[in-house]
Amino acid sequence: MRSEISIWIQASPDTVYSLVADLDHWEIWLSHYRYVRVLDRQDGEIRAAMSAKRGLVPVFWQAVQRAEATTRTVRFRHVRGITRGMDVLWTIEPEEGGTRARIFHDLTLGWPLIGRWFADHVIARGFIEPIAGRTLRSFKRIAELA
Picture 1 (tube, rainbow, N blue to C red):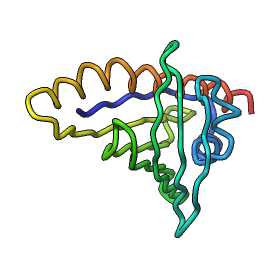
Picture 2: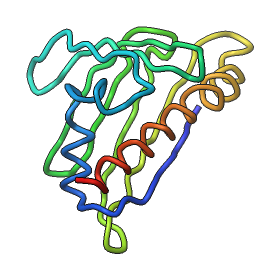
Picture 3: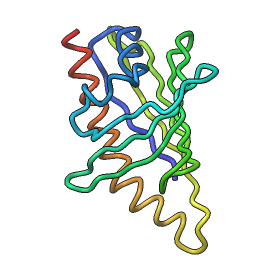
């Protein structure tokens, strides 16, 4: 399963990057997140337990975040939960007087017979894309008010 979602934001790339990279404030800024609990900080990485809502359905996972200020990228590697093994890449780039924020998701489920179908139709369309879309819209609103 590969997914890409993006949004244009009327704010500087540095402003958008600083918000996205600040995992400590996600729970406060993102109303659809139930919690973000930092478990460990080591060698430039943050390991966190995270949970968000898709409608009334809670989803949860653990991820390791690495933010790279020089390239304005933020990477997550899911290490626990149904999306274990998923790689997530945020790119923050200047575009037409503002910023293009993109999120790429890459997940291969090793389940025989239904893994690919389940990842594409249930996980991506049912959860990842709606939650990521709401996350992007939230960061857009916050960055444009900053």
